[in-house]
Amino acid sequence: MSAHSPWPQWAPRPRAPKRRHRLLRTLLLLGLTAVLALVGVGAGAVWWGTNHYGDQVTRIPDAFPTGPRPPKPATHDGGTTFLLAGVDSRSKRPTTGSDATTRLWKYGAQRSDTMMLVHFSADRHTVHVMSIPRDSWVPIPGHGSAKVNAAFSWGGPPLMIQTVERLTGTRVDHFGVIDWHGFKALTDAVGGVPITVPVDSYDPVLQVHFTAGTHIMHGEEALDYVRQRHGVPGGELDRIKHQQQFLRSLAGQMRGEVSLTNPLGTARMLDAITRTVSVDDLMSNGDLRDLVVGLRHLNASDARFTTAPIVRSEMIRGKYALILDRTKLRAQWHAVETGSS
Image (cartoon, rainbow, N blue to C red; front, side):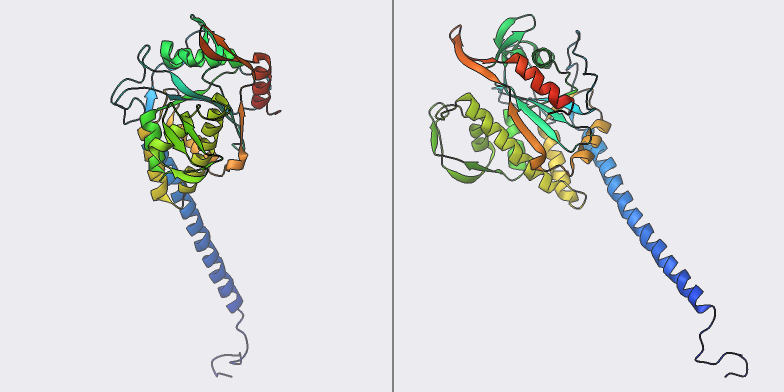
């Protein structure tokens, strides 16, 4: 023992355990602080990114119709419904996204080549996509009956939204549109999209061959693939299958790039989207942020694709047209909106 201490050198000091506890507690607090800091940086990046890129998204003024619109069902699941359109503008200059150098819509200048109703559940765990064939013969307010794709040509986004709302009985929350220029640019921005072609085919109108097998399709080839309806047995229905197949694969490619741990990939994808896509002016940056955050963990298997039910095809006024089962269509979409599908 030391002359100055009553404790043997080998005996434990009474305050040592407390010092170790304080050290452990300090380390835990430092670790927790570091974790919270990282989470804060991630959340801040999402907040900054969606505001930064959201400000760059081209908004479509007065996109929605001004007349009466369908109410949401009392048992609505609280999710969000989008109407997405691809327009076949023959303009040599882009008409959608921040790259646009000319007007999105001019009477008679373009028609909607692709139409999809997309419903995201409130918890963002599932997404339902229903394609509406461009040749569907439907009532168009103020114009009698015609192919549904004529609505955009005659009245732009408001008439298109009004036509789809009256057809389906749903209320569209937001509208998004991309033209051929934007489609090709977005496809190239993700490095191409892998598509498995089931059988060899040749489209005599587009004058393009498609070879069976899996291919990485880039801009022009991808556009031809989603437009093909000649040289395939299902015609317009096969074309819709191509579009849905492409959308599923594109979503997978984009999801692989967008994450908090891949800021460069995320920035690249957000930049590609803002350059090519236009949305309604009611969609705020907060709406975009909620969508991005909510969909980060959505897998391709969570997406359910359908096509508006068709009764038959026939020639009307010398034009090929598809007759829809409107009652069944409304019932199917009602089930989607109420979460009972």
